[in-house]
Image (cartoon, rainbow, N blue to C red):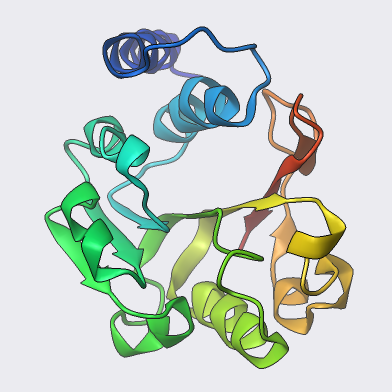
Amino acid sequence: MNLPKIIYYKILSKLITRKNVDYKRKKFEDRNVLERIIFPYALAHFKLKTVLDIGREDYQKFYNEFFKNKELWTMDVNSKRKEFGANNHITDNVSNLEKHFKKNYFDFILMNGVFGWGLNKKEDIEKTFASIHKILKPGGLFILGWNDVEDLTPVLLKNIEALKKFKPFIFPPLKTEQFKCETGEHTYNFYTK
């Protein structure tokens, strides 16, 4: 364990969020979990060189700061969201991932707020998760953030064949492979390859 690295990323996370977030959040609110727990842990414990963040909104532009010295790629289907992405940004449907990246390319892939919010068709869902598995490096980390609400869950995760290729990962700071946030709707699933 590299304690100075862990401390560095926890402090960096607090500074980045304090500078960019203008409201008080509960510890286990979905964005807080991502920004203050998931990002610092991933940066401190995984040797991240290549990062893919799928799905962008205006309030996520500052996420680029977390991965400042990494090869960060962002992707969103909406061309208007390019301005919130990284310098390496792709405007395309997430089901077309394999067209853009070679196998075993990324150390870390985050797909947050896409499943059930545009990624809704069973064949696109299977194709997307199969592609994520292909472009993730062995030992890489894949995090799926989604709304665990019936009308926003097009397919139960247990019924997605492509997700069965991944190994569920017990995320140490949260002590689980599936963490439901305080809101009761947003959930993070953790996987490795």
